Amino acid sequence: MEGHGRRITTLLCFHIVLLHLLSLVGETVAKVPAVIVFGDSSVDAGNNNYIPTIARSNFQPYGRDFEGGKATGRFCNGKIPTDFISEAFGLKTYVPAYLDPKYNISDFASGVTFASAATGYDNATSDVLSVIPLWKQLEYYKGYQKNLSAYLGESKAKETITDALHLTSLGTNDFLENYYTMPGRASQFTPQQYQVFLAGIAENFIRSLYELGARKISLGGLPPMGCLPLERTTNIAGGNDCVARFNNIALEFNDRLKNLTIKLNQELPGIKLVFSNPYYIMLNIIKKPELYGFQSTSVACCATGMFEMGYACSRGQMFSCTDASKYVFWDSFHPTEKTNSIVAKYMVLRVLYQFLQ
Image (cartoon, rainbow, N blue to C red; front, side):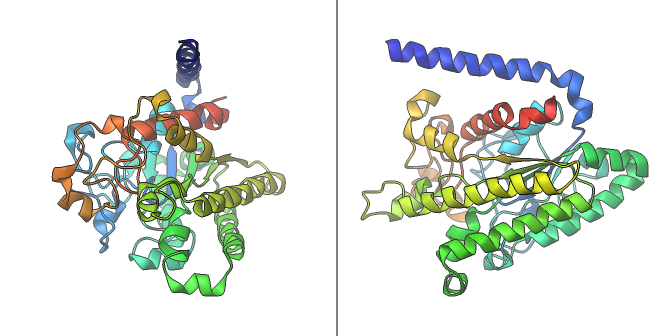
């Protein structure tokens, strides 16, 4: 009972601090007028719906817990982390996809995502499933800036870009979809060399954002990718436990990104660059699910929960769970809305609160 009481106290403190931070939003919302997002399926709100790729999720059962039960193209049963972050900053309750024709610059002025599921830092990663590479996301961002200037006026648009929170979340696909699956990069680089290669791309990308006027930037780290249901399903020799090799790679790469953050803060005048690391909060959820109200961590909700995502998830939806809130993962690669909410709140409390001050 003592341990149970301690857990309740911790959770109450967590929510009290969150409420206090969110109470500041009314006073500080002008400091962050928009959330601008780059990355992969962890933050793609449906851009892949409008390009020729199989890396899509704009069909049931995806989105079944989203507003109106609509499958938007988010790889989730509901909202993704950036939706919750936008809401926490007093902006929209969700961040729209740049390529979605339902939206225009008036919608994007307070938030937009250029992210594309199945992409990575490496162009070779985006080539695997013909999705939007990071350089193309940057080109979209340049076009967005021009449209924003036309909509708000040059001075106001420049101010918005300076004060907007720019978020990045990618890298998992570079390892799991590309390096450890396709023959090319593994023949060119050792795992450590590949990390250096990717970190170099990340650095150039941050520098490009800076040159385009961005000053508030969150560089996202990797989750414990060896604990994704897909990796655990195929880890038969390891008793279907988390794959230590992949988790170690995530830890190593996160260290490189953290060091990169320190370096760029020293070198780029006026930048406020933070490292948002999802690794430990995700691992804690996976290792201690009962603390967060979860019942299943190794198997996902959708279909059999072992290997399905995308179209396979749809074909096997008759086997899907009835209550996704009891599951850490929605499909074999992506968290549920509840998990996304917990991780997003954690990031706001531990890292992104700096932009609310």
